[in-house]
Image 1 (cartoon, protein in one colour):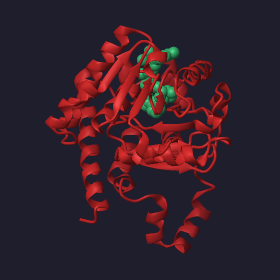
Image 2 (image 1 turned 45 degrees about the vertical axis):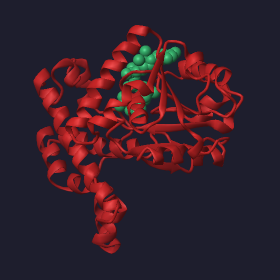
Image 3 (image 1 turned 180 degrees about the vertical axis):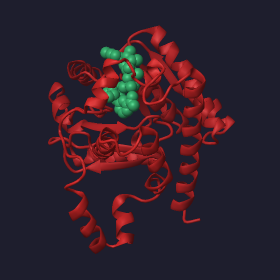
Image 4 (image 1 turned 120 degrees about the vertical axis):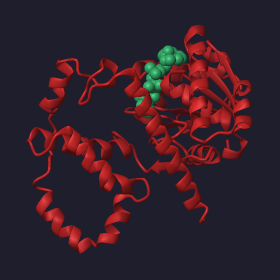
Length: 319
Ligand SMILES: NC(=O)c1ccc[n+]([C@@H]2O[C@H](COP(=O)([O-])OP(=O)(O)OC[C@H]3O[C@@H](n4cnc5c(N)ncnc54)[C@H](O)[C@@H]3O)[C@@H](O)[C@H]2O)c1
């Protein structure tokens, strides 16, 4: 299976990620076969597709005519076997539960054509844990999208020990056709790349607050007003190439011993969870949240991501 031969996509699990992935492929001109366990779940997913599509139109990432074609390209079914009977590429996006995913991979293997590549959007499991559930370990690959999948360009493609080069090339290739920016990891790694780095930052942010150096609000302000601004256009190796590695090496010697390296779960977060301060879902985390606040915050992030996307496409085209 080559990237250019892929035209029919199965998406298994139509929740937060699955509906957005289905939308992204449908907008890109692919025929999408979307599966979940119930008809009601699928109806809800189609409503979510419409809402997410409106967001894309609002922020200028989809035009009305491209959007009009989306509903006719998403075919829903509560039967997994029917959904994948004639697809070229599958995205599995069911709950993050290894046993469930292994059951789903066994069913996918039984029900889809031999040519079909089976990808998993898992956040934490490895191809080597999923591939043994199938008779095609060479065609099993982890491909981790970021939320919201129709706005975030990165997909981390993680090869397992048995994943073939052809599978990796076709997987990265089909994502590139969709305008995504796949990054292929050379070996399996817990947290892939993005979450390892995101959680390293989170550990230090929590430590700064726990040590009484700054409030959570001030930590957020520091990130947004300084290096956070650069991160969308320049990664750490680019940034510090500019600064000069001799200077950075001195700072590393001073700072690495001072920054947080504890493997323990921080008391600050355990306390939040105990008090039910879970974030937007309970109306309070480090900030108080009303429904209006959440909508406004999501809209602000959506607009900013769309603007960054536009700038980065212009940059790539060399304008
Ligand atoms: N939420 C995120 O930010 C995010 C980001 C990257 C990756 N992921 C990963 O994506 C996957 C899905 O996460 P989500 O946030 O969309 O979860 P979700 O709970 O919103 O959706 C999961 C969907 O899978 C469906 N499902 C469960 N069992 C099924 C089965 N046997 N067959 C078909 N459908 C089934 C559920 O009904 C539900 O609609 C997980 O592996 C998660 O780790 C999530």
